[in-house]
Image (cartoon, one colour):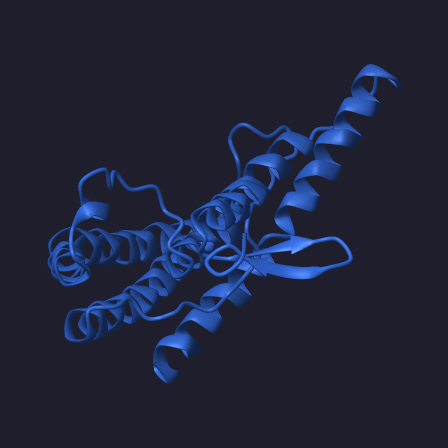
Length: 204
């Protein structure tokens, strides 16, 4: 579990770092709206800035989402299965679908990035001819991070298959609706202003 948590720690750190792309994206959009509709002086770079910030966020937070088990999955039946069956299915499906797809992402992403660096690619949609070879370098890097986190997920599957319980993940921020859902199910303490926390499993 030390190795698993070390890998998860890396994924969380990268995800949090690139989460700041949201702030840059928000400021870019706000600035463009202001200068375009108030000053009637639109920029030539804001559109490309928005695309690259969103793309960087999407790519580099993939391993973070996997580490937090927040990728979308159709688990209507899966959630009803015993933990050992879930672990066995996950282990098999990682090898059948996840790793082949991510290896292809790393391989072809490296080719795309190296070609982009070789001829110093710029955005054909940009009047400012903004360079995009820096951005394309994130494709194989994101794939490599997903491969490493995928290895940690395999270890989790082995542990769950042996013990019959999923090991704990490193905790990070949660959305409010997730916290309320956990509290309603009795899986998490409920914060009460001025009274600390009440655990619904043992208190009413």
